[in-house]
Length: 308
Ligand code: GH3
Ligand code: MG
Ligand code: MG
Ligand code: MG
Ligand code: MG
Image 1 (cartoon, helix red, strand yellow):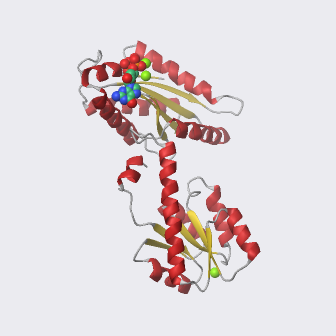
Image 2 (image 1 turned 120 degrees about the vertical axis):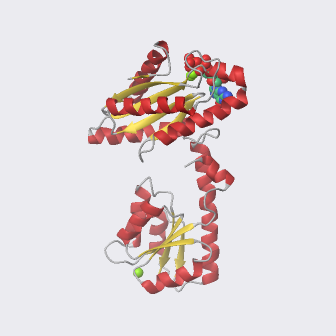
Image 3 (image 1 turned 90 degrees about the vertical axis):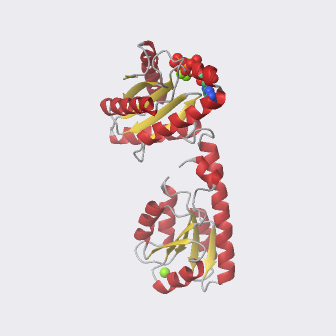
């Protein structure tokens, strides 16, 4: 996800709505009401609803409460527990007004309730309001967590993600790898071509790193000025070093001219790689410091290289 998509409006303007009801007739009514304004997806039971949420990432779910096996409350609780579906807005559709049920629904994280038989005009208005709120909070979240210049995750997002990956790898006794990347002689690049060209270079480098590191649980973040950091869960030192070398090679192949660089005629990167099988009693700092040390050595040994 890149912040520019939100700001420039490249992201789809049509909201995505998932309709969940065990009775086809109810889905049909809502579908007819909403199909002209939104992209509509449908699910007939709770399990299907959860799968669809993960697959299509809708903006909003209209969720029936009374369903066999997994009812609407169970589905909502499930969505709110999972970081990948937590931000989807949930509106419950209920057969009749029931105070206790509504309180329960809101406590679980629903944003609204609609009662059957539905009033088409009010339902449409409520849905539109909720989708507006959803897009505003998506925008705020992306501004808070993504770097405004390069579009990759920012330091805050990195600091939120590292403990999650740490815990996950610690539970599974899997290695966790960090790659720290730093552009070589970037001060000279700015001095030679100016700060605006420097910014353009940073964007291209960030995009290239992001394109190279693309497994679902990996993260690429801007760590500081011209430094980037990658989190690679379930990756050992060999795998991490391989990815780092791919990044370093791919930056050279961008052929961004850097005539004052002391290592190449093009912009290059140096990389430090470190791996650990995390445990709760070890601080995450240890891993970053180890990668930083390797990066320092990569610089010292000539730059445009990976050390791990
Ligand atoms: P080294 O190979 O040792 O890493 O040398 P370097 O010149 O890249 O390292 P140094 O830390 O001396 O300089 C980093 C430069 O990155 C200095 C700073 O002006 C530039 N920089 C940091 N953030 C930005 C930015 O947002 N835009 C631009 N254009 N330049 C930036
Ligand atoms: Mg039902
Ligand atoms: Mg630096
Ligand atoms: Mg430096
Ligand atoms: Mg540098």
